Image 1 (cartoon, each protein chain N blue to C red):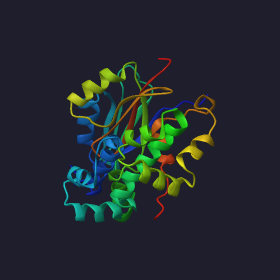
Image 2: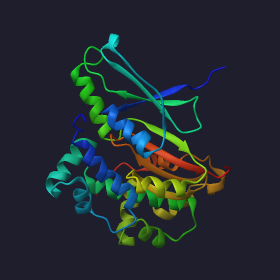
Image 3: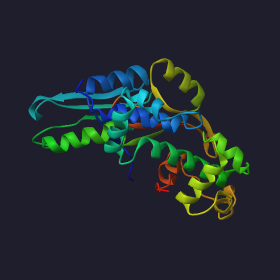
Image 4: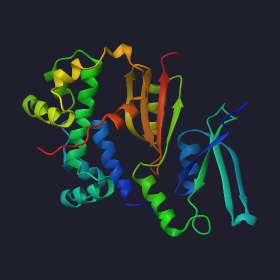
Length: 139
Length: 135
């Protein structure tokens, strides 16, 4: 049986990512391992409290030999333009989360609004990754 | 941290248009959100996203209006004002130009909202925004 284990987001800086995903969003670190044998590659994963079997990999954008400078620069630009990725989160109380996260300095792009499928809000991480936060009608 | 590409500030202006299109927002407000002068901002925005901030804001408003035409029975004038446009006449003209149908004909061409598949609103917004067409 297939299951989702991790999905990856590009970040410009892993320390800043950590302070956003843990410090502001309140997620927990699942793994933070630096491998000297891989040029100090850092495997950093986080996920919401209570959801330990699925995590987001916060991946630094690598330069050579993984990506040439031009490719790395293109990824950074796409991220900054909001053309990278979207993560869809659900919650049991989006209005409470909106208040709490806004107070902690999370940049919301859409305040909670009623939709046919629930109450939906949207925010970005510091780098441009897009998140939806939805309280679904049946939750 | 690694220096963020300048486009991150332009994205903030684009997000502002998406979030506050219903208010009397204009390109000057978008430029301020990006921290750039209006002329420089318009050039850089176009370079990053392929269309001017004016066109982005207008087509965002028309996309929201189209969604309200499909999903509600509110009057056309009411919809026009509620997406931040000031004149029903120019709304009708721009809408007809972008969508190839008047607001009333567009509304009539869709089945009742309840009959359609529900996708997230951010998808509706991204994919429903019309291609800009010059007058």
